[in-house]
Image (cartoon, rainbow, N blue to C red; front, top):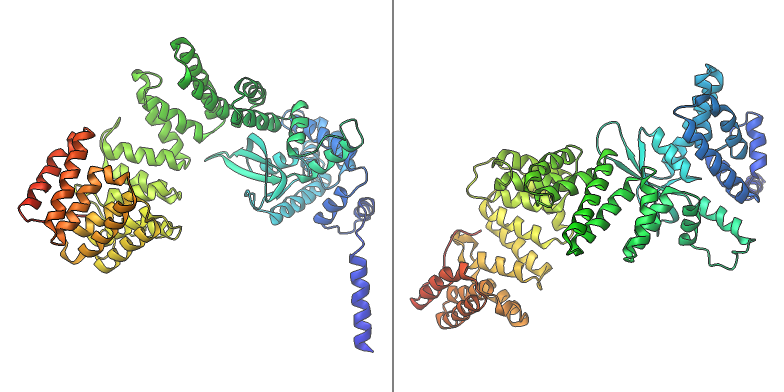
Length: 547
């Protein structure tokens, strides 16, 4: 009997849960001071039969409220009430209501809205992490901007997006008080559903409704994220005039994504122009749009403009302006800017050569998960002309790349273990990494050639693997016709034969290498190729410092 009673009770409970409460019934509960889950309130609102009209009213009211919040707080009281009457779970509604009651010094009312604000904000954070694959839920695009504002960010750009994780979403770029701009992704499928419902019974009902339909609908209503989305799409279709018009509309509302896209469009135009006056006009547009984006905090714009300055696109007299822009971007953790500065200080280009600064910028970029920086830093550590301390992080960083089947990282791990740089010297591990690199990318002639050369000519006797080197060169050279024309690959192939005692074959291949260099006007390598040929003719193999 007890078991039967518990079973019946469980079925009764499940039966209650299968019947969702209506939005109006949840509002009654709130009015009676009963606890209501935020997720339930949102779900019930989205199932409202009049969702379309409610969402239109909600969006308009939220937009008005956020335009007034900074300068006209006294007007927020009535607008906040209208928002919450439309949807009591609105983050924006409680945010502006709290601001209003704080302004009129009504602490109890302010505390009530603060309580709801915190609950809604926490629920949104529980439901996602703001990434592209796990976006935050947001009822409206304005709610997404409010979320960013409450997170301590100033929204400076937005664009709509759709992917496998969400039917319709929005990317919000937010600028913190200090540091780099932060990207937050939001799922705003509720808006998609509402507008689809709104259009179902109109003259447009025959149109196939999709995200692009909605974006066009929003753009015509002045939505800056939609305008930027249309502009970016038209730009991708090379419809430059139309794209420019939409992007300019978005940029006038302070959408830095529109500025960066305009800069890219005008840069392309400058590259295509033969008329110097038109070319300069396009470059001026690039400059102005990047400056607008920089003013809004875009480190991408700082980096892009810095590179243009350094490459003398704005004249040699302005070239020095590039380095400060790169430094400004690197200071807010732009990894490519830090990497570029590492290269500049390493080579002494446009700045005084400073290996300590080069190391600092390389490691900064590597710490920001830039794979190019991690590989560049390893090559920097392998430079025999620089005396510097070891750094075990280089091994860790490359190993992480190797897990992603990065054959260049594997090759560098082999070099570091062979030389004992930042790790204990170990020829067995070095050879293992070299073999893994070749196995991972057998079609990569550069990888195969470098491994074969090192294992053929290295002055580290314990590292040499001449039979293996010849084997992989034979396989690669016999299957790659382009490689057969490259003097450096022919040189390695010949050296491998010589190291295995076949000097006749080595001489034949080396003569081909010399001929290929002469035909291709590779005068810079002719002398060394001829030296190797003479060595083979004298029955000698090649030995040098490698890696």
